[in-house]
Amino acid sequence: MVDKKTFELANKLWDYHHVNQSLEKSDCILVLGSHDLRVAERGAELYLEKWAPLIIFSGGLGNLTKGIWGEAEADKFAAVAQKMGIPKKNILIENKSTNTGENILFTQRLLREKNLDFQSFIVVQKPYMERRSYATFKKHWPNKKLIVTSPQIPFLEYYNDEIPLEKVINIMVGDLQRIKIYPDKGFQIFQEIPTDVWEAYEQLVELGYDKHLVR
Image 1 (cartoon, rainbow, N blue to C red):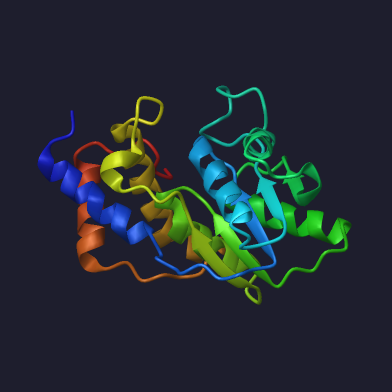
Image 2 (image 1 turned 60 degrees about the vertical axis):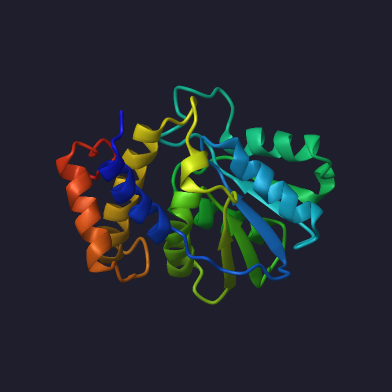
């Protein structure tokens, strides 16, 4: 059971993980795979609203889906999109990547194979992975125009039986740690972490929300 104080600390991380960018018409929608099918639905909605003429789903089986799903994240997401009315001919699938860096690198390879050279992307990810996705994309593809978005769901309504609150908090804590340490490893661009956000992170780690940390 998560008490009020813990929820407030987690909500501070949730807010920081959002980059709060406005949508613009782009060459392509790039949906990054995960365990949350609402991400696929958000990407499909953007396509149906004509923000871009083509949609790419990227993701094999990552840490959160390996051993749970028998089908690659990208294939599962693409099926959601087709059910929502997106023609198969306007969908590209990259279903081998296992982390955010590979999402970008393997998508680059896919586009080269298709002789496509897009200049602007709308990247769709889980709400609490917006900032990390932005930082990873900008590291590996610095010259492209990028807008990051996610399912438009407030923190209070995001978690559910399939993705419980405790799991969300653990992942958010781990992702904030990665935002801090991954630039030195060459995985992401540097981003400033406000003092109050880092203090909230440290308190959550002390409370035992350390299941997703890099050891």
